[in-house]
Image (cartoon, rainbow, N blue to C red):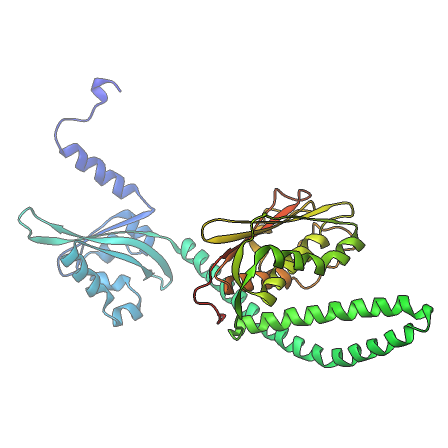
Length: 384
């Protein structure tokens, strides 16, 4: 900048520049009032935002810019009082234009005082943020719809579980009868074995549904006792061995030699580990591997189920433990299920005062689920 282009010395040029800036700004409304809230200055941004010309606005009370509801509540007076006592008052609310339309104004009212503290009046600075308010309202509405939808799905799930229990009992009885007949007729053994497996799968599904409903209702209690972590993990492996063998997936435990004692509900802990193992087996192709690992630090046990399966897309990972979540990146011919297993795992782990997390490098790169549980349980029992 050349010397001749520099502004003149003194403060006058700052005031001139500031006046030009404020008068040309259409995005920000700047309003000056006396101590009683009567408008003294109405810059062009205010005219653009509210629709009143300076002639229409100057001399009017600031309250006319507020909605009738806020005027009835005394908001305009309270805002000036707050600014007078504190120095400033935040202003984020609906305001009224000349044509009767409303906009969401975001700004501040500042008390203007002389050096001796005498109150000269107030300055109100504001901009239109209706766009932001609309986004917030849209997100709130979406969240409300999601919450209501989830509650409805949980209610339907509990109802479905109760309905399914009724036909299951005669199915189990019929399966027992067929097993006896199959002992004398080799032709029946194959079909009966299929029926038996499917009835068992249906039983597990109903049990998961009932447990999920109990957890959501806060009615599940834990029966905690001291157990060997390694022994419980080996027990879980025996439960899923047949499924892994039929799928052609190798199971490999990697457990510490030194026994780890942990306070757990044995049945619920088995549900946690078996569900994680079944999940990995389901999404691991033939010839793949599933590892079951364990370790401990001074206060927690870590159980990890790692696989060489289909992996999890990054956008799906944050939702893996939500009810009814299912990914699309799974092997063909998979048993999709209802997405209950991992949601149940999360709730049961939380009931043990623990956490569960998932990690995957992406589709086709396997996954690892990590459960972290306190070695010694304090207050556990009631869900919810």
